[in-house]
Image (cartoon, rainbow, N blue to C red):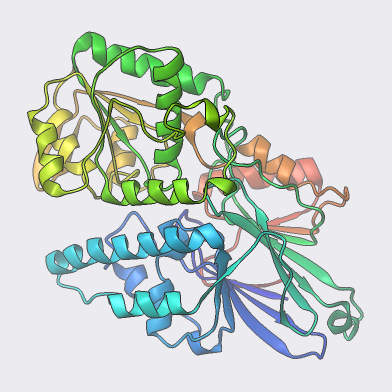
Amino acid sequence: MKLTFHGAAREVTGSCHQVEVQDANGKTHQYLFDCGMFQGEHMCGSKNKDHFKFDPAMIEAVFVSHPHADHTGRLAKIVSEGFRGPIYMVEPCVGLSKLVLEDAHHIMKEEAEKCGSEMLYEMEDVNRAFEQVKAVSYHEHLQVAPGIVVMFHEAGHVLGSAYISIDAPADAYALAGREGKRLVYSGDIGNDNVPILPDTEPMSHADVVICESTYGHREHEPIEQRSRLLKEAIVHIIHDRGVLMIPAFSIERTQELLYEIDQLLQKDLKTKIPIFLDSPMAIRATELYRQYQNYLKFDAPLVAQPDRDFFSFPNLRETFSREESKTINDTTPPMIIIAGSGMMSGGRIMHHLRRYLPDHKNRLLIIGYVAKGTLGRRIYEGAKQVKIFGDDIPVHAHVSAIGAFSAHGDMNKLTRWLRPEDGKVPKKIFLVHGDPEAKEVFATHLRHTFGTEVVIPEYQSTYEA
């Protein structure tokens, strides 16, 4: 096998990994794991705008791990540049991915008008891409070429997320005196004890692993602290009559947050303060979560809910249109606003940040990863003043973060996942999707723990697997 890393190499976003593998007849095939957007820069910025460093027409299939934009955001672009093969993803991932690409197109159109760049793709390309999508089930055997079998496994990251295995046939490798080989691509591996998702499925075996490393350098706080810290933030803004802003990714983080708030309001915290879900994409995504409840796992019985719905409660107000969103400005605090984007790099959260960051009575609660170069990272790292819509905005609001809400596994979780059930440590591990310092720490940890080869690939580099 040969692996080429066209994104998320020595950075977090832009996941796009090419694999060249021989079938049972010795013929070489080319596939992609994910085709994501580079985030932390404008969508019409340089890396997203660049042509692919491979011929899209030569790629025979794309295997998508989950719907987040940094894993799906360039699917329409690769189609616009000549890719005509199937795009495989787990069934719930289909609708969510379409939401992501439609939303990205909307934001990209606004940014293109500002920065004067050409669009990366048009809506016709989005529609064409989804004509090429083929929904699959977990553990379905996809024989994509003679002897080459691909399978999707539960990753526990978001609804419809998967890590993906590809088995190369023994016959092809016997030609070179080698046995067959299993490559596993992690996508994004979920956190422990996520209250609405199944657990990450253990790996049965793997020879080579491409593994994410977003939080490979740290450990999250204990899961039981999640509700306590969220409750404390809500109690504070009620006492101070302030505004609690929670930037949240529309897929998974928002639904998990709604679930936690629903449980708090039922069991522990009696309050009637308004809670605004101010994100059209999150509202649409939550509907898809309701539609695919059979893929979810709740830690409380659904039938115990009066409305049989963990994602809604009397305090919640969904502000879908811009006109509805503007009514938030007329609401007297205390209140909670949940809005995208999670990295604070766009979306409606920007308007709320500009309005409420200057007041010390207000609070900003960060519950997800914020990439370098984003407004969210600058605020998280303690900026006293930030620029929003051209204005200098002082940061007087209290800023805090809850790592236990992360949809990514930490060092402990990833290490456990990387030890296959057959007890044989992978011979080679490639670390992607992480800041350089996170990769270095995690690589050192894995070398000491497993005594195996760990590679931190360079952008656009090719390696023998």
